[in-house]
Image 1 (tube, helix red, strand yellow):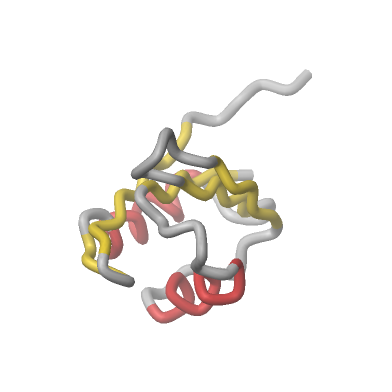
Image 2 (image 1 turned 135 degrees about the vertical axis):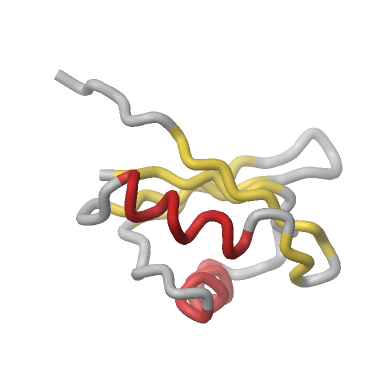
Length: 85
C-alpha cells in the first residue's frame, strides 16, 4: 500500500476529476481518497493505492509534482509507509 498527498487541490475539484488527472499521467486508480481542508488556502487530498508499491508511485510522483492544474500549482508528496501491526 502506498499513500500520496496531493497538496493545493481546490476543494471544488471532484474525486473523479482527480482520478482522471492522475490517470492522464500514468497513475493507476486510487482505492480511497480523504479530503484534508486547508487553513484557508491550501486544501489537500490523501490518496491510498492499495496494490501499488511506494517505489512505483515514486516514479510517477515527479510527473505531477509542481504541475499547474486547475489554476493552482499541485504538490505531490509520497508518504512513508506506516506499520499498522
